[in-house]
Amino acid sequence: MSTYQFLDILFVLFGRHSVRRLIRQHGKTIGHLGHLVQQFLITIVQTVALSGAIIVTTPQEVALIDARKAATMFEKVNVPVLGLVENMSYFVSPSDNKRYDIFGSGGGEREAKRLGVPLLGQVPIDIATREAGDRGQPIVGQDRQSPVAVEFMTIAQRIREALA
Image (tube, rainbow, N blue to C red; front, side, top):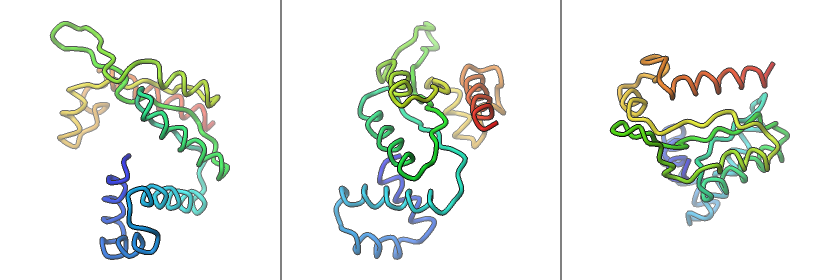
């Protein structure tokens, strides 16, 4: 999630006026906003009892940097990382069934090993999943046999096992 996306969520939850006042108190630049986002998340984590966290990343290094920061934050507040999910892992072309690693490959697996947590799954980029999402329907409810639905169900099972 980008800082801008997070700010949009804050605006909805707390109103633009309150969020802007908070930003003015803590700095005006986007760099400061990143710190503000981190502090907000730490406050939430310290307020709500969590059984664990799932780190979601994409395979490329720039996303893995954020995944490392998230794992470090959860470690600081004693929330166990249950595993890592690699989103947008690859794309299978519907025209020739060829796999394309648009964002590189293996980043999630390497990072999971580095963090000492399981790789819970690798979710491909998928047109049907995007279309179902645009309709407000999860792909698992639309086509349980699709590769993405199967991967989501596998990830859910692994999370259940980690929490057992």
